[in-house]
Each structure stands twice: as structure tokens, then as C-alpha cells.
Amino acid sequence: MKRLLIIPFALFLTAVWAPAIQMHFKIYDEFEDSDKRILAGPPEWRGADISKFAGECEAYIDDHFGFRTDLIRWNILMRVHLFGVAPVQSVIVGKDTWLFYRSEALNDGESINDFMGLIPLSDAALERLRVKLEENNRKFAERGINYIVAIAPNKNTIYSEYLPERIRKNRSRTRLEQFCDYMDQHSTLKVLDLSKPLTKEKSKLPLYWATDSHWNSFGAYVGYREIMRRISGYYPNTGVIELDGHLGVERRANGGDLARILFIQDVWPEKNDTVFQVELKRTSPQLNKLVFRHDSFGDGLYPYLKKHFKNITSEAPFAPFRFDEILRERPQIVLHLFAERYLSQAVHDDFFYKEPGY
Image 1 (cartoon, rainbow, N blue to C red):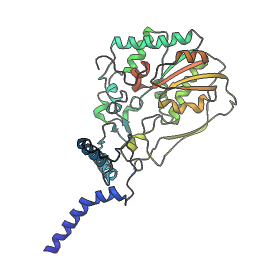
Image 2 (tube, helix red, strand yellow; image 1 turned 180 degrees about the vertical axis):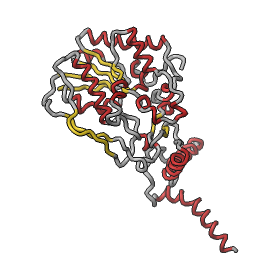
Image 3 (cartoon, rainbow, N blue to C red; image 1 turned 90 degrees about the horizontal axis):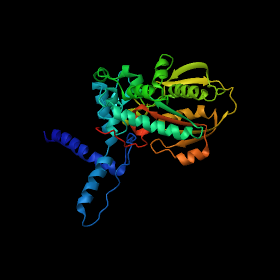
Image 4 (tube, rainbow, N blue to C red; image 1 turned 180 degrees about the horizontal axis):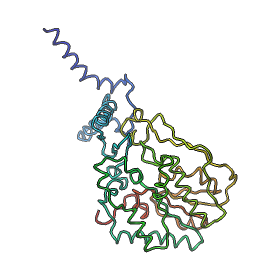
């Protein structure tokens, strides 16, 4: 009987000490940590200030506990596969292995609350946005510079059919729809809402990654195409690089940024990797200079825009325009591209901007 008791006792001791041994000696290669933050460093003894030392010890153990990433991963995999929910507030598990970004959880703009109509813009807020953009336009127009404002829609705006029904059934009028209607009625500045052309192209190829928060290469191409069509209104001899040949979809071995947040990038590979060719007849840029202010959605446009502009200057997405410097550079176009979830912040030049009343 005593020998039988030894087995559970040994298992108990192993469970208690194994994380500490792993934490110190790193015997086992754990799953790669994908936290988008700096993990706590080792605590430092400071003599009299023992309260800080205790807090630093706790933070260090929390971040470096043995088998931490594997335990988190197993917990997430169980919840995702068994219950279809993510134990991470910033990610929503949708239908057919689609993942969506709940940006509000990280104070990174508004996506799901906006989709559900929970944060509509007031008339005063819409007017502030109009005034701000028209002031930008006026300053550029005085020097003959064309100002283009383009908005890349949230993934859930284009692919709402893959959202969980509990969210989808509460869809309402979004701030983007409010804003574009208001600008159409009260401003001569024509905002380029990319949600409309993207929606028209859905049946051709996927436009967004299934496991990432961004548009894919084809979505970026459609965005580029619409921007160049607007630019060709100012410079008629400037065309669009057209697609040439086969359009296809492939799978990537690993999932995107949302899958990485959930530690499941190897389990949910990316299925919306679009492949296509573009015509290469255009050999040299026809326009001189572009000032391109953008967030991460703008990254995929550079391969195409470089075919049209000899020089492209990038601007930070949430900093005020450097009007004096830009005016001295005399670009032909100032392109301001931002994601739908950043509507108020991007226009008001402040990542932490909140409309009064939020």
C-alpha cells in the first residue's frame, strides 16, 4: 500500500518543482513567446526597499514561469477548438477559422464598438473632422499640392459574414458611413472610402488575411488602384498598373498577427495568401514626389506607388503634418491613408484622441 502512495507523491513533487527547474535551467524548448510587450526583467535587491523587490519578483515569475507559454497555448487551444472563443480580449474567433481584431481591448482605435453602432459621431464631432481636413487641404492647395484622404476599412466591415452571430446581428451604421455621408453633403473635399471598391472585388480574390488584422496583397492592390485613379484625375497621363495573368490563392505555413497573439500560428495557417502578376510595361516613374502619411495598411502600397513616383517621403501616421517642410519640398501629391478604426485619431493627428463624451 505504501508503495502505491509513493507514485502520486512523486507526481505531485514533479508537478511542483518542474516549472522552477525549467525556469532556471531551460531544459525544454518552450513555444515561442509572442507577447507584444517587453517581459519583466530579473528583480534587483535594493536593501531597505523590500516592497519593490517583492513586486519585481512577482512580475518576473509571472512572465518567466516554467512552461508558461505552453500552458497558455494549451488553454487557448482548448477554448478555441471546444468553445469557439478566445481567452484574449483583443481577438475574436469567427467562422471558418477567421479571426478578428477587437482593437478597443488594446486602446488601438475602434473596430467592434463602431461596427455595432455603440459610438456614433455627433454632428459637432463630424464638423470638427470636416474643418480639420479642409484646413489641411487649404494649406496644400495654396501651393498647388493635391491632398488625398483615403480610408482602409476594418476587416470586419468587409467580411462581417464571418463574425460570430452575436456581433453580426447587432451591426449598425458605422462612423465611416456617417463621416463619408457628412463630407459628401457639407464639403468639397472628396474622401476616398475604399470599402466600396473592396466590397466589389470580394468575389474575385480574398482581400484580407483570415488570421491577421490587415488586408493582403490583393486588398492592398485594390486600394492602390483606387488611389491612382484619383491621382489620374489630376494627372491624366498617369495610369494604373493592371493585373496580368493568373490570379490565385495559396496557403502560408503560419498564421498572421492575430493567430500569433493566440499562440496558434502553427495550428491555423493563413489560407488567404493571394498571388498574381502585374503588367511591367511601365519602366520609369512619371511623377516627381509623393508625401505619404500612413499607418500599417499603407505598407503594402509601396511596390506599386514606386512605379509612379521618383521620390516618396513617409510621414508618421499620428503626428501633425510638417506643413512648412512639406510646402518647401513641393510634392505633387500628399496622400493621407489610415485604417477605419483610427478615424478620429488620424484626422486629429493624435493617437490618444477621444471625442468628447466617450
